[in-house]
Length: 164
Image 1 (cartoon, rainbow, N blue to C red):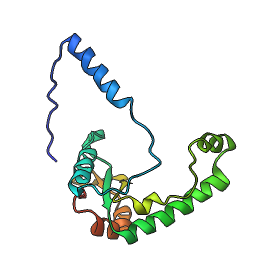
Image 2: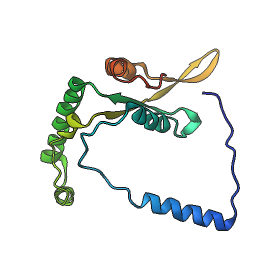
Image 3: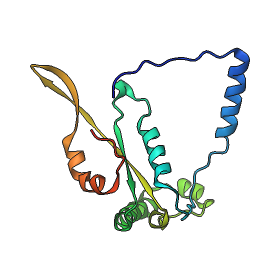
Image 4: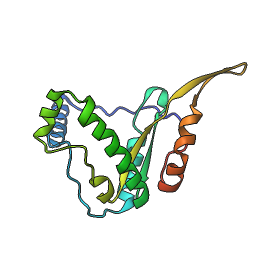
């Protein structure tokens, strides 16, 4: 992605206050979601959301993440099994009692059936970058091990994946 300078749009003080109040109002309805719809949505909607998220600003414009849209039922089942294993360990051995008490009000536990019933899962992978020093100079490169381990899921699941 080529560098594009930010073009700041100037607003009056009055308009800035109004816009910030509207933005606050829109975001005040955000909630942590624990119940997911089975209703299908056009994959293009999910792809647009993922493409927007993948272009978020980051240090040196590196975007140290990749997003994968998962629709395949077998892969969603594999993700559920792995997530429930980790969550069960957390709930039974690692979570402090205070944390569990806070979670109790939401009726949540280590069971994650929505990981199979949601039409799509969006999986976010962190990419770690290393510095490569050579006579030609210094540059950043993604750690190869990460992409090798996850390449089968990425290759099969996401037509809009960001390529590194």
